[in-house]
Amino acid sequence: MKKIVFATNNAHKLEELRRIFAGRMEILSLRDAGCFDDIPEDADSFEGNALAKARWVKDRYGYDCFADDSGLEVDALGGAPGVRSARFAGVDHDDEANNRLLLEKLAGLRADERSARFRTAICLLEGDSAPRYFNGAVEGHILEAPCGTAGFGYDPLFVPDGWSRTFAEASGEEKDAVSHRGRAVRALIGYLLK
Image (cartoon, helix red, strand yellow):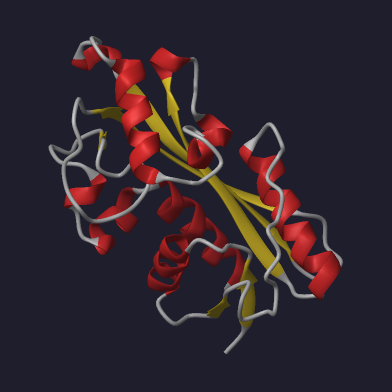
């Protein structure tokens, strides 16, 4: 079975990717590749951060790899938190603090003023080929209080269009079927397996 490194230290993302790949390829973590680096994410776009992480692993460890950068864009906040989603409330990557700050910033807004989307950009570096990008997005809105205990990040606040519950109230498989990351990963899988 072909192996490829997913350049992430996020255990939740790794679990999602392994579930979506469903045994079609072996997904190695940074730890599996011997990388324990704190890879900088200081680009101003999802694509830029994904490229920086993938290039870090490819250049230093020699593995074919892919990396993603994902985030939440809230229209009422001009697209914030965007590429700073994981560090919205500070550098600690604290989901509860991020969710609390988001709710504070949206306080008093009506439901129709809480539109948002999750976006993912994946960058694949394979052999000597130029970087390839795979993108996914899902539209939805932000609730006034968290609901559900599954998932991670902003999942307890985000209701995708056409749903009546949050990502945190869905099973992993239900989320994967419509999520931003699920869409980008399926495009990546289609490319890798063709």
